[in-house]
Image (cartoon, rainbow, N blue to C red; front, side, top):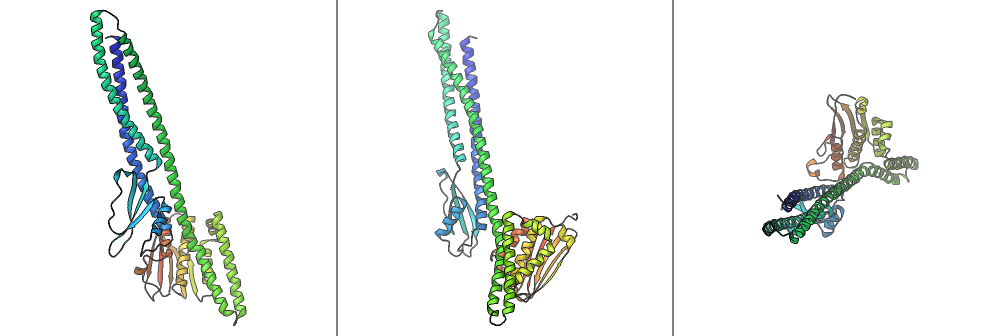
Length: 419
């Protein structure tokens, strides 16, 4: 075997290795591009669901272009709300989309289509995929050229051996093959560096998406806390001031006493806001105790109403609650008591906390006007907030009520039996 034949064989081997690596990279790029598209759609779907839960109530009878633009701006895409079928965007347009059912209707379901462009990382993957395809074609062209060149070299070598004269063409061919081998090695190293850069970019995009999801969840939870705690306290203070206006001409002493109580409640609300800002609300609840906190909630919401609170808290049961469970259970009790006084006009509110073998139960029951639970399934924020809080701490909540029979709210938390 001559030197030229060995060099040609080595060059062909390097070319085959390059083609195999390029084919593997092409398959891997296709798989990563599809996975990135799927993850982008699922992440955007979760973000859109969180945005819909945290957004202010929209006009559910007629979706306006302003509603659609508002939802699109909050979730980082374009939102189209429709009741009848709308064809999807072309598959080769580079636009990702998904359809999300957001409202049931008597005639047709109301669906939101969220469209958005692929992230820069996805476009980079698609570009790399096209580059890899180009490299494959280039490699096959080089392979065909090498085969033809090998045939010519073999014929030239046979001719040289027959004539016995050296050939300058053979030296030029050797130089060309050496350059081809060096180029193949350099392309393989460049492909390896591109894979490393792409991997780091994917990790950075995943971290940013995680931080965005945590930010949206924090805004939703802050909205629940503002509605269940601060808004309820301010509402009770407003009712007290309204009652004072009627008492000023007839009973100034009583009016002054109620105003003093209202000032105390407002100061407590201010302290609560500061506690939320500094993150001390769970610590304050732990120091005060669950029973004292429930009594304080009842006194704050009572205002000038003629209502009796029957509160019995099992201290052993409350000691088994975690800080998060105590805080969320207290906010559920606050919302239920506020609803009993504001909407039910109750004169007796019963609060019980006790433990069983495998669960801890919190009961809030009143003798108010009650309501039709079936017609309030999609009511205001209060009932939805209570269900969200119960789910957050691993519990379940049931709300039973009928008109003129009062309302019963039962929170059940899992309990292992050990402190």
